[in-house]
Image 1 (cartoon, one colour):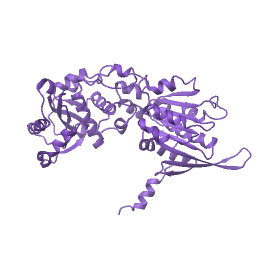
Image 2: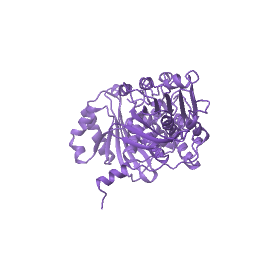
Image 3: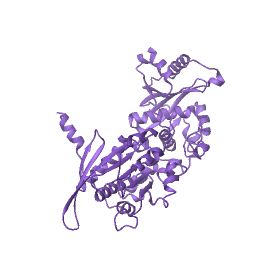
Image 4: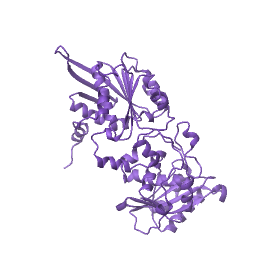
Length: 459
């Protein structure tokens, strides 16, 4: 017998107490820097940066609420993430557990995105006082986000993953903190060394009276050695330097230095768990299809065969002609793909494919590809390093592009991580295929797939 709707709602809103472990030295510093006996009590802000899973977010959020509740009564506070949904998942959910464990009363008004927090304190004279404050949740994902925070007066603001937010939003939010004694709280994973936050806040920490603390996974006592090693294995190249070592480094050189033609170019003849096609589309630029197989026991992706046509060099084709070629490509492979994922900007191609009865008869789904560039590159890098993304020797264009796919050094000097948009069509197609399938079927670690630490470009 299933649970009733009311029972499900009660379970959804139930807050499970947080299981604390002893805090590390740096976490204790985060928790106490604002206390009256701290040498940093008159500082204006704190920045905690460093590797993933280093315990900075948990200690920062708890300390922020403790400071607010002990310092103010009846005031408004800001809590900001890249998106409200991500902030609720990554910060608010564990924060509510911690506050319950410490006997704070929390009312979460989901429709208004505000937490009403109350706590009773004993005064030095032995009397009991009650403090109640309001914590508004904001998303700071793009330039327009600054409009959502205008007009409110705040006594403090917490910014989780501040490196993912535009400078205009952070400037607007800090400008709203006009109550005497207001402070700012920042956490982030490293990005490009020319990022605006590093230049304007971290490098000016002394002038702005900011306490800066750098975290690594060793500063998180709740992580076992086994878990640390697992996280370390998820990242390679620039992602390892940023997310594991916690370094603000530039993206330079080839994007996939771990690609090895002796290890990643292999002929396979095996029964695939499922097959899919990915397409990167162009009229003058190349159009390329790829037939991929996924083998569940090994969590292994393989590019079985590919198609490549360059409109500039080989003559332009119409959208209809490309769909004809796609049908011929599928028939020649003698494989029925489960779905086709396509560059989401290729609307004309998507429309033409969906008009054809060929795909309807074979029940082949047509879906827009997931197109977070940095997350996709990170996912492909990991699988190449693990030798769990391979390609057939016939895929010559892919092999050529792996050697020519490089970061844009000029953009890097301006604090932007982008790849040079040449020799990248097979690389985009591979990214669409693997990242889209891994998101849909959850074949890889959620940490790897959903790590948004790094702006990335969206093409």
